[in-house]
Image (cartoon, rainbow, N blue to C red; front, top):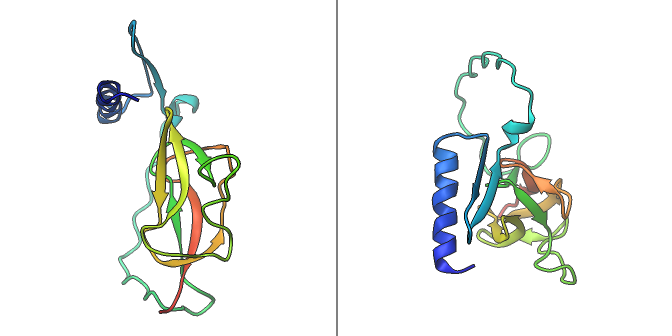
Length: 151
């Protein structure tokens, strides 16, 4: 993607997000884009009032808690297609049981022909990969679950 097209696309995405739009279509002679939020497919009904938040509790330590290891999900930062490997014939970035270092790429999410490397923010062992390769994922959806490891 050339720099001018990338800049235009980033501007359109910012506008779409800032104005909380459900759908946006732009068609110009050299630039066409269609964006739709996941909300656009849902029936419009009044949202129930959110429950009162529970009282704040201190975060559990990174070490093992009773009942098993502490886990954390690497979540998708955007809507797109989840890929476990950099190309169809390549090995997956991670497999269940692999030790992942902070900053290591664990998957890719493709959005509008842009391949976004998703990196682990923590060191841990892969215990689950709930996202399905080649399928659409939503922003915030868990992609890879890591269990913290003791150093």
